[in-house]
Length: 288
Ligand code: SF4
Ligand code: SF4
Figure 1 (cartoon, rainbow, N blue to C red):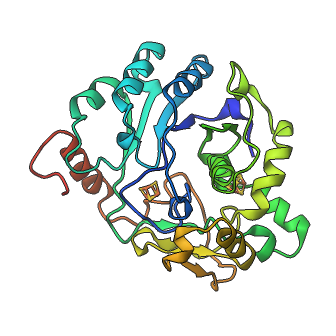
Figure 2: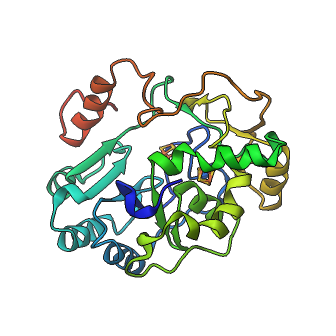
Figure 3: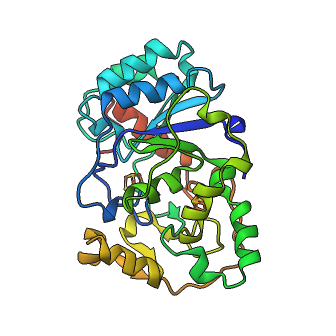
């Protein structure tokens, strides 16, 4: 784990609505009965709270372009964060979106991935560490080295600020007590201040454990038995519609997370991303 002030990026989850239904989505979107859309006022507080954070402030989902206030949010971000490189957008760039010129104008950091290739592999999120790793010392050692927290981001949802974006997703799905108040300086927290959030989310999460990853295009979530029961209790659509499978893969060897781990088996990653970006620019090569 690392302190939040050392992160390169902190995300704002503006919605969990998405046109895709990727396997093992970190936002657990298959299991929500209704998507959320962050209120504009909360978004403004989130941006304000990160004005002096030195890294990138990302807008992410779900698919952020589906938020009805996307344009207003983008313009607010542009006003409050003068350096364009600090304004980030993570998007699938849905077909027919109308925001090409706005995105080019506002976001100096763009990360586009439409998850359409079968070589993108997603780590099981809902296979609980505490169900797979019986030795608790080992479980906490793996969690303390979690690659998501070490390489990805803290995040803000409508329910507060969290030390890890996946912990934020667990809180949102299972109606947790919420995160820290979104106020100036919340992101200056060190590792010693994560305990409560960590104890709540990490044992239920599979991200830190060497598990078999699944192609995102399978549209299946791997789950462990206790998490499956928890999903049934909240009447998860992803269970009711057969999109969840009990995980049987066990612990795997050759599990080596790194910063481009979700894309490293995509042949021609640059071409793949260019085809998506062509869609932003309205060029004929854009993926449909
Ligand atoms: S694109 Fe896939 S991984 Fe991203 S939010 Fe949508 S379903 Fe989840
Ligand atoms: S919630 Fe999951 S992804 Fe986040 S730090 Fe804990 S184990 Fe890692």
